Amino acid sequence: MAWTEVAPQLNGQNQIRSLLNFGGEMYGGTLDPGPPYGNLFKWDGSSLWTKVAAQLNLENGIMALVEHNSKIYGGTTPRGNLFEWDGISAWTQVAPQLGAELIRSLILFGGDIYGGTEGTGLLYKWDGASAWGSVAAQVNAQIRILDLIEFNSKIYGSTGSTKGNLFEWNGINAWTNVAPQLNAQTSVSSLTILNNEIYGGTSPGGRLFKWNGTNAWTQVAPQFGTQTAIHSLITIGGVIYGGTEGTGVSGGKLLQWNGVGAWTEVSAQLNGQLFIFSLGKIGGKIYGGTAQGGRLFEFTAVEGGQIMRAQIL
Figure 1 (cartoon, rainbow, N blue to C red):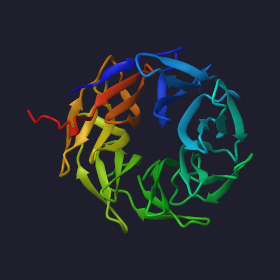
Figure 2 (cartoon, rainbow, N blue to C red):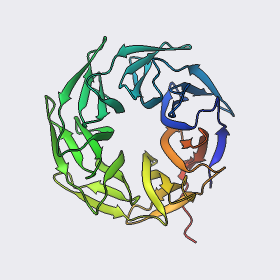
Figure 3 (cartoon, helix red, strand yellow):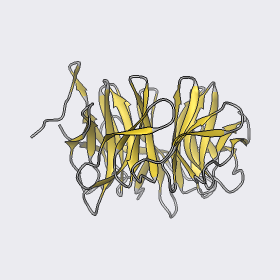
């Protein structure tokens, strides 16, 4: 079991920061500090990325992707726009920046698009036409809403800056902190659900946390080796996987949680890629968006109806 590269870098795009399975095909949003970034890529299903939307409004990154009404939407940096893909070759701006926030995460909830921001950690709701509106202010001095997830008909957001909290939205106008910082983890970068429970991947210790359902995180996996961050999480076949960053040149791994108390490695670094910033799935396969080469990796997680378990050596 290992990563296989199924798409090399295209057009100098260094980071695939977001992935979306749209109609059974994989799309990726790109990021980098310089132009012409902020593209939308589509995987050809075999061996190549193709560019299906170029940079718009000098936005350097598509930090999050979501599907709504059979269309793809992207949340941007540095000016926090919401883009809509025309289904052919271009982005259209459907919401400009509100305040000084960038969009770090997106979710479709109750038929509406919501965005988690970076700047002061707000929650935005798109009006469905041309503007963002703020529906939750900053709490606990958290400046980033790194991921959003729906659980029990509520929106939850994981935070980053100094405390790695879990926030619950009250459905009207405010966040509530339902899990304070644990074990000095300053960010919970990614969220997933397994067996009706919320899990979070952390940094700077690359741990896996589980929410107790009321008011606290519990640690269910410590750091694996020198992996410093779990940037992305995905659940497939009843198993949680995490994409990593590591110390120095050790990152870019795919880890599998053993369901009890530890991470196990199912794929080592491939082709010098140091970060797995995004994970997606099609069928029984996991896809990873990489940096610093903007590649797409594939891992077979379920084969012949069987979960591919890590081998303990």
